[in-house]
Image 1 (cartoon, rainbow, N blue to C red):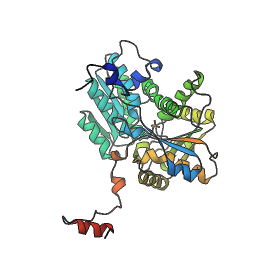
Image 2: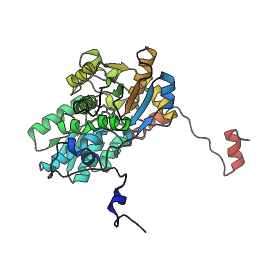
Image 3: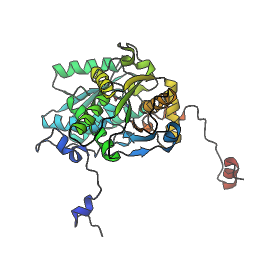
Image 4: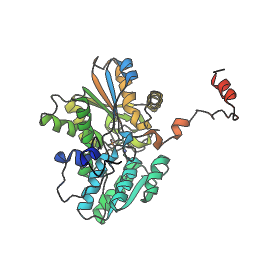
Length: 362
Ligand code: F0G
């Protein structure tokens, strides 16, 4: 017999209700705000034995790739789309390297809004493009990079009746603060070090804001040191100048002129951290290493693991520190890099003994 209708307490026990309900008291929403949710957030904080052993720290992976559309973007999109709907918007638009467009398309579809997404031509992972298409968004591709796409979208939103849902929309940042809160709630404290990838720099801005608010309210006693990592070929903040032709295999963070640049610098400086670059080779190694230990995150997501290993090699990790690496997107978004160089699986007849020989069991 089902207890779900008889006993609401049992029916809702342990059920995650989505960020706008779980963190309602910290969100800019009112009784009239329609809650557009896919039950995002509540993502696992996974202890990493192998990275802890390797570095002498206590390392945890915040796997935001298991959000409903496979990336952390859902955290901001639930709020941005809810507020767009509250304001009576009918259409939303965003520029994207892929994940924002996937989230915008999904949440707009849930809300019954029209979505258009502008992406750099030929530079977004197939899984992400598939998401935008299947959720019914109109996809436009520009002959240019993400920065060009964002310029088009900003101009469009200025002059036409369409709501911009990139992270220049403050509700996106407001929603993405929740990752920091969840980490503190899960650890029972703030980590000593908080590591994450940096692209358009919205997420580092949001996380630092989230930590500062928890600290100001006395929820945590201390703030983390924040280290952000850009891909070497797309590292404007590290170089201190705009990169006109950003280049990296980590297409999610292939950005040459981050919208939240000054906030990212402030987060690193105020926390005593840094923004540094990791090479594509380091990212690829971290991508494989992470997957070999059970967590399949997309390339850009593993930049903080590459960064952690670099900090370790440089002797810059305080021994025994509690470290969180935020893995921002799921590996299935872009399976090409996972199978690249793996070779064809061995074909066998329907014969267990043959399988055993191939497996070295016989
Ligand atoms: N990781 C992933 C998987 C991303 O998709 C992004 C950004 C980042 C990290 C960087 O976060 O921009 O807040 O610094 N993706 C954006 C997009 C640009 O369009 O999906 P950020």
